[in-house]
Length: 188
Image (cartoon, rainbow, N blue to C red):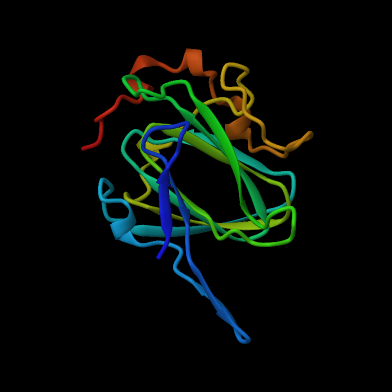
């Protein structure tokens, strides 16, 4: 069974360290179980992204959607920032590495990200990320905040990131319009 712990930095974020079952043939790992997150909704869509080393994706956030991330190949530096007004951790920033670790082992760690927590990742190596979401793609719930906002203070682990135009032009935290600012308890 997995060890599921709430983040010490951002309320509602859960880090999953699954049990690895292995033998001479290889290994097996459960990367996600619905029962690990009793406060969450059913995950209804699965996605995969492949990124080259040096890419940064984010920071993105949703007003209504939760994500669950897992990195089966390579290394991602995940950056999280709590944007939720009314959250006890509003303004907190956290980062952690998912996937292959510096010692060559693979952690198989996953992360549950609730609505209103900005999230992104830097590809420290060529990598693959899989993510489950509890809502179908909705362009009106695709929001962003500047990846390099000094008020967020993210450590991406990269010096010359490759960014999409969208991620280059997201507003700073202080410039997010009030109707796009997440609040605790905003989910439908």
